[in-house]
Amino acid sequence: QVQLVESGGGLVQAGGSLRLSCAASGIRFSIDRMAWYRQSPGKQRELVAAITTGNMTNYADSVNGRFTISSDNAKDTVYLQMNSLKPEDTALYYCNIVRFFPPRDYWGQGTQVTVSS
Image 1 (cartoon, rainbow, N blue to C red):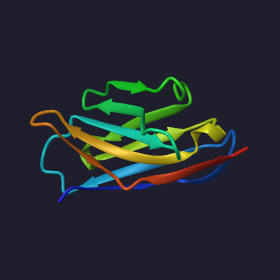
Image 2 (tube, one colour):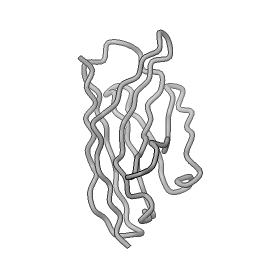
Image 3 (spheres, one colour):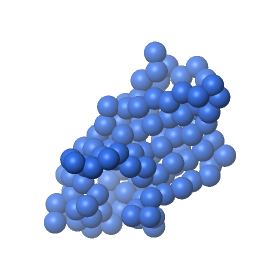
């Protein structure tokens, strides 16, 4: 059974940093893409950052230049380094892994990030 466990969330002041981690277990297939999403109350879940097995990355415009996604494929783990945090970054952050074919994706339970002004 595939499980994703996120960690590293918390409360931080504006301008501070946090590092999120997501460790996947029970993986018996090749992961094609790992990503972080976030969701704030009353808003839709949005993509924050993604990385493919070829180390191609993409970021939401709102975090580009402040956040960095990386992965350790040997450990099936993905990280999100968040710097220069802003109150608008406050959200529940979810880890997501994707297999392209046959298509399947998995989600973590989320880790809360709160940025105070």
